[in-house]
View 1 (cartoon, rainbow, N blue to C red):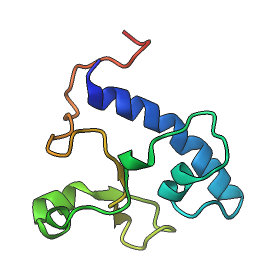
View 2 (cartoon, rainbow, N blue to C red):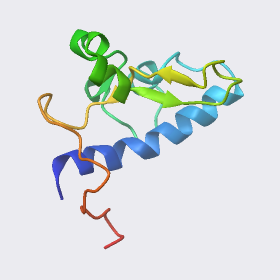
View 3 (cartoon, rainbow, N blue to C red):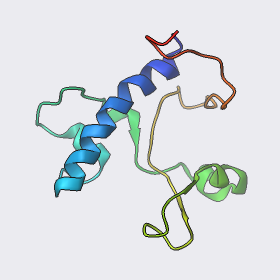
Length: 110
């Protein structure tokens, strides 16, 4: 399995309990704080693989910035989209995420 897929596959199950806990009330702050927290987790994720902001080139490069503009409900933001900087670092730092036409299979779903 490609490394990016393995890291992403490990990270996704951690996001769900974080979202559930956040919806119930205060947690450790953001997802990075959640990963650094002392409480035992069923599916821990390494804090070193979490980035809470995009590097400067991702903020100031229009093409890269547009790739981080995500649609959200108007209740979240009146424009219906937000700039999402926080992300899981699934590559080695100089890789490009696979595009939507990738044929890599998800573990257990060949």
